[in-house]
Structures are given as C-alpha cells and as structure tokens.
Length: 287
Ligand code: TA6
Image (tube, rainbow, N blue to C red):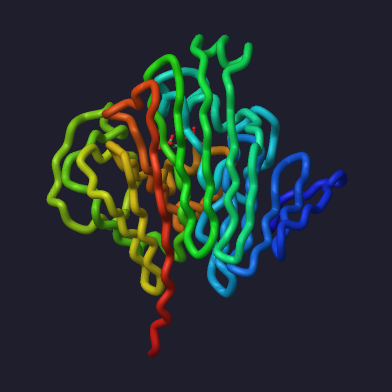
C-alpha cells in the first residue's frame, strides 16, 4: 500500500501457507484470499484487499504513523468513549499499542486476537480496570468482534473508513429514519427511511438502524452486518470540513465515507460485545 512505512527490524513467520510480516509498527498479512495491514497501535486494520479485488478501506495518504496519534484510515477503534465525551477524542484505544495474543491461519482465512488492558496511563484518563479484546477474522469477508470487560459502562464505535470511487455515486440504505445530527449540536432529527445520498457534510448518529447497512456504488456493493449495535454513524466532512483536517487532502472527501457500527445511545454494560461483518461484491457494468 502506498505510503506505508515498513520497518527495518521485521521478521517473517510462516503459518501454513500464509505469512505475517511482523514489524515494530504492525503486521502485513498475505493470504491466498487477501492482503491486509494491521497497526499494533489501536489494533487498527488499515488495509484489506481481496485477491483480484479492490481495497475496501480508505486511508489518508497524508496521515503519518506517530506513536500516540490517531491514524486516519481503515477501522480505528473508538473506546471507551465516542467522540468528544472525554479527552482524547474517541477514547484512548486507538492510540495505544494492543498485544497480539493469538493468530491462526487456514485456507479460509486468518484470525488475529488482540488485547488491551488497563495501565497507569489509561487509569489516569479513565480510572477503571478493564480487559478489551478484539477478534479479527479475515478471509473472503472482514469480521471484527469487540469484547469489553470493564468496571464501568463505556461507549464505542468501529469507525470504518470505506473507499468509494466517487461519493456522488454512493447511496446508503438500512440506516433507519431517526438520527442525532452532530452538525446541529446533537439535534434529534427524523427523515424518510430512504436511501441516503451524501452531497454535503454529514455527521449523524442513526439511533434506530437496521442490522444491515448497504453502501452501494456503481460497480460495488458493501454490506455491513451489525450485531449488538445500537447506532450507526455516518460521517463525511465534505470539502469545507476537510480543509480543517490536517491529514486530509482537498478532494479526499470524494473518495471516502465513514459508516460506523456503534454503541453510543445504548452504552456497553460492563461485560458486552459489538460485532460487525463486512462483505464486498463487485459487479462489472458492461457497456
Ligand atoms: O464519527 C464521526 C466523528 O466523530 C466526526 O465528528 C469527526 O470528527 C470524525 O469522527 C473524525 O474524528 P477524528 O478525531 O478521528 O478526527
């Protein structure tokens, strides 16, 4: 993937026919079904491309990897709070290194399991004990399961940045008609439950979403199956918003859309989970 920084001290582990290139920064996965890249920081999947297919996620070319700074792209994991409910924004899970505790490969795909535990640093921001586990199953599809076991309730989002060829051709279904609009100070709004065309800045928390959201482009359909979610967030800063985001280029907003499986209106209980499965299908249009 262009612009990604693979390290000097890397080593390679073979798991059956598949390989993980393990570096200080993360893991580069090569499997007969896909290629993927995961950062240790945030256990963040920043690249996934089925063999013969197109990349599923968008990453900001201008976003550099820095310890303690959020990387813009793929699936940042927002936890134990969403947005500006605390400091840093979107919680600390996306800016801390997670431990890879297990990885397995088979001809169907690869499973990686990451964990994050409370530390002096996390307790200075959020004074509770926790173990949070992220199970990632990569194969034909992408599946993420976030398991939380904490002393306190929390909120979360799997802040997926999807690529699109042109935002003007995208429509999204399955969101439901009720949302809070972060661009209008969290005002409660209602819309017809009909396909959403994004043609201006959008930052909404849909609070009665269906279990399946579909992002439809001319030649590709991305199906997002949520389990145990309460909300789906849709975000695109559009031209004016990107101008205030240092790692977004002027026209980046035309190539991405965030659709996030979330637990915001119904926070996680102390022991809880959020699951998402993402499937992508490409159909070529014959002219
Ligand atoms: O999920 C939408 C949102 O909360 C927006 O309000 C926007 O700020 C975005 O996330 C990105 O946040 P970040 O802190 O990664 O720049």
